[in-house]
Image (cartoon, rainbow, N blue to C red; front, top):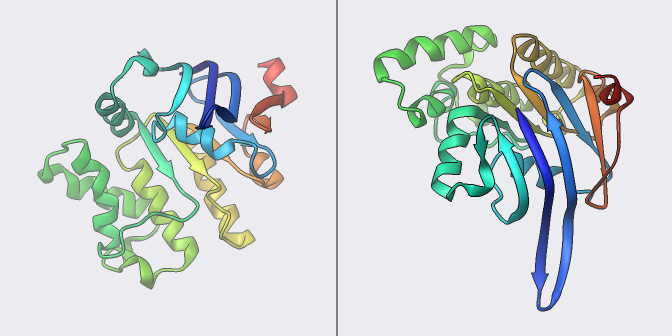
Length: 228
């Protein structure tokens, strides 16, 4: 599903280059649940941003499904993002002045789903994530765990092929974190490919394999990578 070859990300300051990612080679198969781990500053979130086509300042080869992303214009990359990817952020990124229902509906409008069909799809998502009673509330009226559940519902409402999650449980207590990870595991069991960034070994245990980054390099992979 994803193939990266020789991907670099650097920033230039005069004649100097500061590398955030170096010569990244990685493959992620459709239906996998992959974790990216490493110390702070290792390049984890940068790599996730590249996979989500939120960062365009990289070099190398990146293939998503049958698309050579490095050859696409920014507008085409944005369209690819909207069509295939759901992104879950640590800080939720819900829109404060929209209700839970309206936040979840947003990806459907991006994908030009007719308004006559949206209500049924959003209501199914509300039911699936057990937040029907929260539909008319605003984000400020929800707990952190509830906001993250809404953010996940929004990310998956349009059935993306790929979910990217950046420290999705970083602000939650252990019971909430476990609930979120069980949601991810169920989504993955249904065929959704998931790539998460986390510092948590507990969260990483939910995945099929782990890619470790350090100083922008892939330094090792979980032994399960070698057997798969």
